[in-house]
Length: 196
Image 1: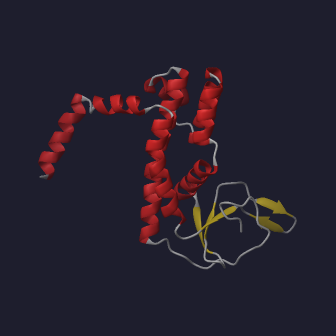
Image 2 (image 1 turned 45 degrees about the vertical axis):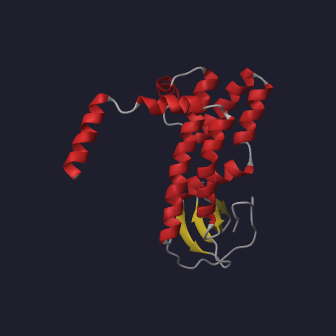
Image 3 (image 1 turned 90 degrees about the vertical axis):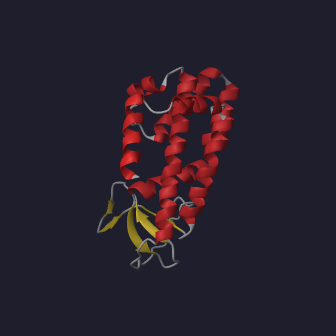
């Protein structure tokens, strides 16, 4: 089976039953949370390069995948010159970013298959099954049992670094200063009083 750093493996593996442990679930949750923050960074980056507000971006790109947003941001970076392209590529065209997104996609959409012969956790990912005469093959990714914790820590540490490299700290600070809409503040206060 192919590992996350391999393109293809010709060596099969028998799978054993496996249940995801609580620490692995926690790490997957941390990874998903950090990736949501990374997606916000990508969206703000795209908006800054394209001259769009967050509202305009929501209308234009809707719920596009992070990969599509990164590609669109690169196209806008090209219009701003080689320095912007270099910064964009340094942030998003690297092994760590691809590994984070791959892990996020597996955590969000993968189907747990079991444990491989070498004690790696195997997940089926969404691709079309390949039919070759009398054999059907599906694409899988395998991860070491501690891989999601490592990916989560990498993703969490990437968020402030990306904000700094892409010069987005002021935009995020301004966004945080906006706070809740007045009608939401009232609901939030009511909820806190009720829960107290």
